[in-house]
Length: 248
Length: 235
Ligand code: HEM
Ligand code: SF4
Ligand code: FES
Image (cartoon, rainbow over all chains, first blue to last red; front, side, top):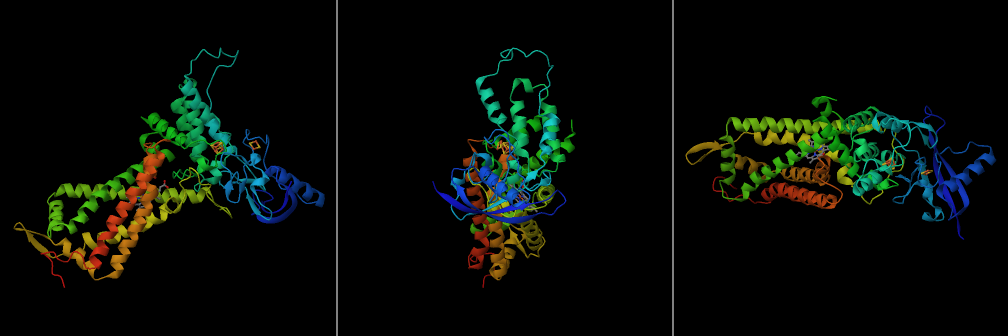
């Protein structure tokens, strides 16, 4: 098993008012089988032992399903690999002596809370604006009461895989949230259950996205390239179509 | 529900309007290039073309005003999208790079606002030179008309600055359209997952054809072409 020395340049920021700065670190004996986040765990253990503040970063599941992790590594959201969240990234992607620059997602709508942790509640507010289906709660309904064609269900599922990580915003040169919002709209609008609130949902979510201060979409498609689950920009087209249908 | 005008100002509305005005401008410049290429035709082809336009009378004015409106709306939207993007990311990344793959990020897409603003300045200058420039009159079919061809040839023949300056701006036009044509189709949801690569390639090819078509003419004249016109005094 080979080990390597990795140099790190990590964004440190005490709180949202602090202007922030880069701090250099060096880690010896990085194991190639470590995940990227495990490498940061090792760094933090060292920092704690030294009596310094560990680097704050977001994670939860560490298996690519929760959408908590969202680091920008050497200028790429979620690191160098396609269809991979940072938590699924391994140190074997790097070589001995590499310098790795780690920054938080940068967007006015995602203010830094501390170090690499940003506040993504703007996404929650977009969901609250219309990313749901209103139902009378009570006993669970019979699953086959509303037939959904297989094709439709496949399409809806593809869009539903969005984990809300915000990498699309982080990577977009305009900090647009169109991929996220498009995926959520396209998911619910493609299902029969989503039809009654379709127009209202589309308008409300598009408006909220704007209100939160995300930029416009310029069709860079960078979002699709960094999305850990491969949401296609076709979702943005669905959002645009449904918006126009809702107006007329 | 938002009103129609509110909808036009939403992110989706702005994008569709940018795309529509962009496509319209592309259609216009295709038409414009057709007119320019008349300089390669019969000696009086270009002046005949100019006469044909002037004979349209009020229709020409409607077209001009419409075109101006589309141009202004497009430029305004483009600049406002750029201003908003600056607000949306006040602190830039220290290191940033594209992840490639499906990404269409590159020189063309990243420079839309820059190439656009250059085009805006260029168009003002261009109208001043050719549409408002002083022309001689010539007779065609017994009718007096502007000798626009002489103005064009005089302008490019004697000035490397004009000839190469125009050619350079036309390269920027090509750069604008390299991303622009694909982007407009995508904004108008006329492209999809399967068609995307084809639409992108066609967009780039059309951008190259248009840029080369436009930059060819000033260089052709500068290097002595277009001189054997019967209507023009060549030295
Ligand atoms: C001959 C003139 C022009 C043509 C043919 C043209 C064409 C286009 C096309 C086809 C698009 C794609 C639209 C879309 O993304 O939906 C576009 C986008 C754009 N244009 Fe132009 N354009 C011209 C002049 C200008 C001018 C004068 C400006 C600004 C001053 C400008 C700024 C922009 C910007 C910033 C975009 C990108 C919009 C975005 O980020 O989404 N363009 N243009
Ligand atoms: S669309 Fe992709 S990149 Fe954007 S939030 Fe969803 S999973 Fe993350
Ligand atoms: S930690 Fe859950 S997706 Fe990365």
